[in-house]
Each structure stands twice: as C-alpha cells, then as structure tokens.
Length: 174
Image (cartoon, rainbow, N blue to C red; front, top):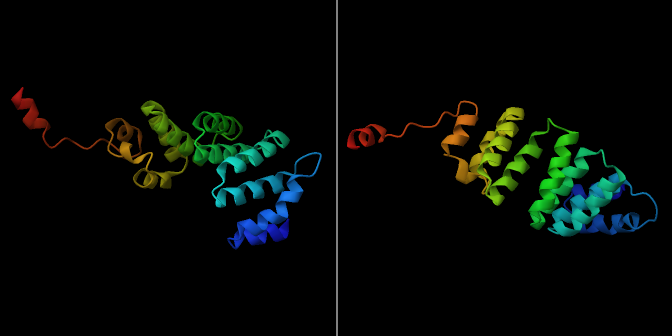
C-alpha cells in the first residue's frame, strides 16, 4: 500500500494500480485506504466510471465517511452521471456540512442541469465557507456564465451587481 502511494505521488498511477488491484479483489470487507487510493489512481488515468465503482466500495464499507461520498460524486460528475453525482454530494453534505468543495461541486452540477437558483445557492455557500473559491467563478467553464449575473453577484461578498452604464439613458427613453 505504501509503495502504491509513493508511485501515485510520483505520477505513476498505472504502476500503483497494479499493486492495488489485487488488494481490491480480496474477499471480505473493503479496505477504505486501498479503495480511496485506487479510485484516485483511476481518476488520474481518466477512468472516472471505474473510479466511481471503486468509490462505491468505499461508501459501502464506510457509509459515514464524507470523503468517500465526495470522491464518488466527483468521479460520477466526470463520468457524466449528474443525477448520481448529485445524490453522492448531497449525502456528503449531510455528513460534513462545512466542506466548501462539496457546495462548489453541487453548484457545478446545478449549472449543467440548468438550475440557476441552485447554482447561486450552492456557490454562495461555498464562498461563504472558503472565500478563495470566488476566483473559480472565472476559471470554471460550468460557472463562468454566472460571473456577471446580477442575482449571483447580489449573493456574493462585496458582489453588488455593477450598475448599468445605460440605465439613465433607458429611463429617459421610455
């Protein structure tokens, strides 16, 4: 296990997985550390669907582990399974309600599902818990469309909506 972790840290996920796969296939109770590292390796390889399968083992073995549910949500999100990713992140947030990254990911899912009010609600909560996530509004392609949204800006710290420079003109034209 330690050797697999060292390989993973060196960017050698395939080699780490070769060590971890036999450990995953042992009969009996799943080892949470093995599952977490194997899922991380699979994600690093871009195999999010298989990573999610391994995450499920972790969630079954340790159902009160918020990290397991966050990992499952993350891998399902990247595998394109938004409904199940949403369910996993919602479970994670019930177990650990002060984790900013969970709300950030819930906002990303809401954006892909077209639920503007949930995007704003979850992103505002993420920023409330971890202020530097505000920068991600510019960086994340799912959230970028909400960067100038007046409703979003109204919910963020110091984010009062910008004044429309033509507001006075429109007021006099009507």
